[in-house]
Image (cartoon, rainbow over all chains, first blue to last red; front, side, top):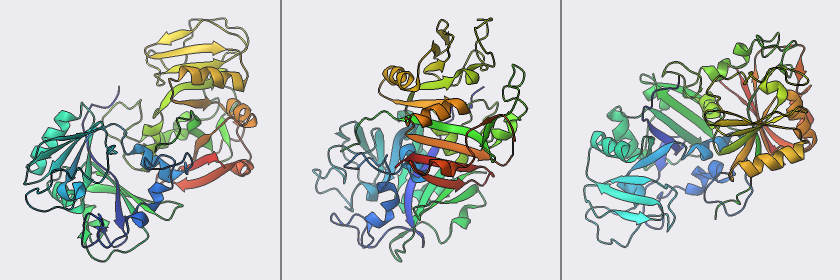
Length: 218
Length: 218
C-alpha cells in the first residue's frame, strides 16, 4: 500500500535573497558568503528549536521549525559544489583545510563534493566527504548508491543547483527567501516562475518574514 | 552544542472542523467519526505523497506534505484515548476487535490506550497497544519510558487532548482545520485563542484550503 521506494533528489532549506542570490561577491575563508551577511539569510532558521548550531535549548517550534527539522529527514547522502565546501579555486594547495564546519559537520552522511581536482576522502565524525570529478548524472548515481535507499540532498551553491536543474534531476526543492537583497554574486534565478513549466510551486509566507518556496515535479 | 535531549509530548496532524469538532455524534464501528465525514477532515493529508495509506506513488509535495511526513518523525510512542482505538464503551465484550487499522497500524511504536477496562497487550506488526488505566501524568511517564529517548505523540481524541491540556502536559500541538463544520459531537474548543495564555500560536493557511495551527509552549 505504501509508495514505491523511489530515491528523490531534494533541495532542502536553500537560502536565497529576494533578488535571487544565494551568495554575495568575493567569497573567502573569512567571508563564506562574500559581501552578503549569512546571519541575515539564515536568521529564520537560527531562531528555531531544531537548528543544529544552537547553543541553548530554546527556539521556536512553529512553521520554520518544520523546515529545519526536515533537513536530514530520510536523507542518506548530500551532493555539493566545491564552493560550498570551501573558497579555494584550482588545485588544492592546503589539504589541511577540512571545510567550514569544524569537527562535527551537520551532514552525518556521505557527502559528494564536485571538483575537477580530486583529493582523498575526508572523514570528520559521521560525515565523509568524497571529492569527485563527475557530471550531475554520474554524481547522482554515486550518491544514490551511497544513500542506503534514502533520498539525496542537493546542497548547493547556486551554480550546482543550476547544473542539476538544467539536467532535470531535481525532484523537490525548498528555497527560503529572506527579506534582503544581495545585488551581486551567485544568482539562482531572475524569478522562481522560470521553473513553472516543470514544477508545481507553493509560496508559503512565514510569520518570521521569510517566504518558503516549495517546488515539486509536475 | 545541541539542544538538551528533552522528550516532548506532541500533538501531530490532529484534524478539526472550523467550529472546533474532531468527531461527530454517534461513533460506531461503521462510522468511526459519527455523522462527520472523515474523508473531508483528512482530504488535505490524503492528497500528499507521504500519506501512509495511499495506493499509488503520486501525491503532492508542498506544505501539507511536510506535516504528513513529520507525523512519525522522532516519535517513540503514542498515547490515545479509548475512543480513538474503538467505539466500544464499558467492559470489553469482544477481544477479537483489534482497532480500526487492520494488520498494519500506522504507529510503528508502543501505543498506550487509556481505558478504565484494561485488557492484555495487543501486537500488530511493529505496533503494540498497551491498555492502561492511568491519569495523564502516569500515562505520559509510561509512554516516555517506552519511547527510547524520543518524543511521545498524543493522538487524541478531543477529550484526551483536553485532559492533557488541562494537566498542562502538552509541549507542541499541530491542529489542521478543514473548511467544514461538524456542529455536534466531540469538541476541542470554542476558539484556539483559549490557549494563548500558555502557548505561542502560528496560523498557517495552506494552498489546499486547510489552516495549520501550530502551538508551542510560551
